[in-house]
Image (cartoon, rainbow, N blue to C red; front, side, top):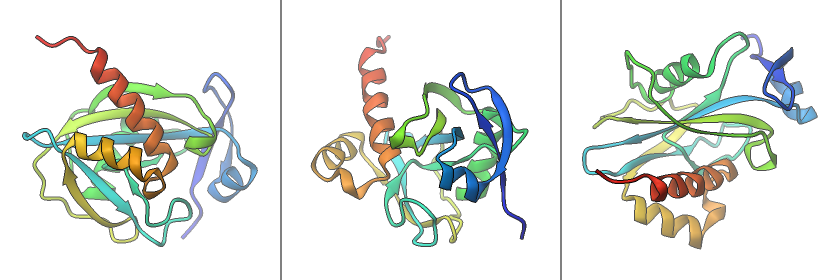
Length: 173
C-alpha cells in the first residue's frame, strides 16, 4: 500500500506543497486534521481508545473520530470520510463546525477543525485505528482529563478544554 500524501501548509493554513505522511511527521511540518465529537441523545460523548498500531498516541483516549486531511481534500470532506472509516458512521451532511485550533506542539503541528454530530451508534470500530470505545458523561471526561491527562492524546486534552470554554460561553435558549 502506498504511503498517504498530505498537504503541507504555512502559518495561515494555506497549502504550500505535499509530502508523504512519514516525512511530514518526522520533519514536524504543518499539516491538517479533523476531530469529531459524537454525542448521543443523553448528552454523552463517544471516545475512542487508539489502537496500539497507531504511530502516535498509542493506546490513548481520543476524540470520537480523528484523522488527517488528505492532499487535495477539504476539512469538511475529511470529517465525513473519517466518521465512516473509523467508526462506520455514514452521514449525508457535514457535522457542525465548532472551532479551529492552530497548529501547535499539542496537535502534532496540525491545524485542526473540531466538529460535533449526534448519533446513538452502535459503531463498527476500525481495528487498526481503534482498540475500543465507550460513551462518557461530559463531567466524567472533564474530571478524568484533569486527574489523568496522560490517559489522553495531547490534542484531545487541548480540544476538550476549548470545547468546555466554548460551551460555557454559549447562551442557552
